[in-house]
Length: 560
Figure 1 (cartoon, rainbow, N blue to C red):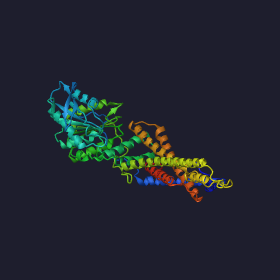
Figure 2: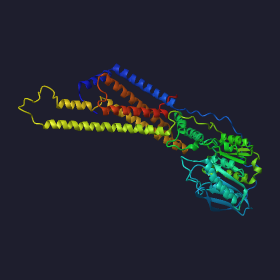
Figure 3: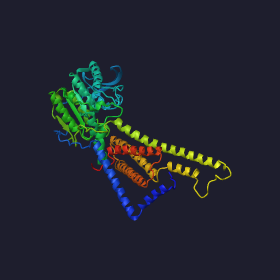
Figure 4: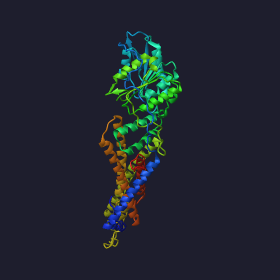
C-alpha cells in the first residue's frame, strides 16, 4: 500500500533513515533481537502458566515371573475336534444383533462356554476373535462372538455398565444352549472390554471365569495419556511436545460428551470372585502391563480372591499378536486354562512367561487450567482466524471505495468548463486546493503510515502459518504414533519448522510495534480512518490470541 509524499510522511522516512547509520543499524539490530527474545520468553512463561507440564512418575512396583514357559499348570491335554459354526440372533434392549457360535463336533457334552467382549472399534463377528474362537472350539470349548452393539456406541458416548448388560444377554443365550454346561460359562474380554467384563463379573456371581487380555485397568483418560506418552517416546518426538499430553487428554472435548473417559473399573474388579486369567504381551507399550496385573491382583484380593493367573507373551503386541497373528502359545494356553478349571485357577506358576517392563506409571492426568474447555479453545482459534480475514477484507473494500470516490472527483473536475471570464482560473503558481488537496487528503486518509501495512500483513500471515503448521504437525505425529512408526523428518524437522514460524511471528510483531512507535514519534497517524484503525487492532488482538494459544501448546517453551 503506497502513501503520499506529504511532509508528515517524509518526516517518518527521515526518522527511519536516522536509524540506518552504522551505529544506528547495530543498535537497531540489538534492540530487535532483544525484543524478540523478550517476547519469546514472555510467551513461554504464559504458555507454562496456562496449563500443566508432563512428568510421569516411574513405575516402582514389579511383578516377577517364576517360569519363562507360559504353559498352564494343571491343564489337561487338549482334544482335537472339528468345529461347527452357526449364526445366532441375540435380542438386546430394543435391537437384535447377530453372533457366531462355534462348537466342537463330537465333544462329550455339555462343554464349557466362552462369550467374547470386544475392544474398541466396530467389533463384527465376521472379523473379530477368529483365531481365539476356533482354537477354543477345536479344543472342546464352545465360543460365542456377538456383534458389538453400535447404536449406543460412539466416540462421544460409551456406557460400560449398559454395555455389560448387553453382553450379559449373550451369556444368557450361551447358558441356554444344549451343547454348553451353563455352570461353566465365562467371558473373554480384550482391551476396552477390560472395562466391561469386571462389571459383568460383579453383577453375575454365577459367571464361571474371566479372561482379561490387554486390559487397561485404569480409567480411559489415564490410559489415553499413558498410551500417548509411550507412542510419542517411540516416535522420538522432541521433549517439548510431551507438554501437549495433559493439555489434550485433560481438557473437555468440544461439544460435550466423553463422560466415560473417567470411568473407574476398580470398584467392580474388587467384587470379582471368579478365577481370573490375566494376559499381556511384553511388546504392548500401549497398556500398563505390569501395573495392570498388580492392580488386578490387588483388587481381586479385596474380594478374597487369589485365583489370579498371569501370563506374559514375549514380544506380543496388543491382543497378544506376534507379526500380526495371535500367538500360537496363547492359543494353546487359553483353552487349557478354561478346560482345566477349577484345578488351573490356582495352579503354579501363578505368573509366568517373559519378564515384563513398564517404565512409567499410568496415573491421574493433571488438569489444564484456563484452557481446559475444548470448545473455548477451538472457538478462540476460529474466531481469531476469522477476525484476521475480515480485517483484511474490510481494508481492501475501504481502499477500493475511497479509490473510486477519488476517481469520480478527479473526473468531475476535469470535465467542468472554466467559469466566467477566466478570473476564477487557478493560479499556476500555487497547488490546486480543490483537486490536488482533495486527492492528497484522500491518499493520506486511505493509507497506513509507511511500512505499517506490510508488517501487519506479515504478522497475520506468519501467525496463521504457525497455527496451520502446528495443526499439521500434531495430526502427523498422531498418525505416526498410532501406526507405531518413526519419521525424523516429520517429528524433529516438523517441530523445528513450527518453532521457527512461531519465532518469525514474534519478529513480525516486534517489527510492527517498532515501526508504529517511530510513526507516532513523527506525529503521523499509524492507521488513518476508522476502518484501518479497527482493522489494525483486530489483527493485533487476533494474532496475540493465536500466539498465546500456540504458547499453550508449547511452541515457545524454553524449558520452563
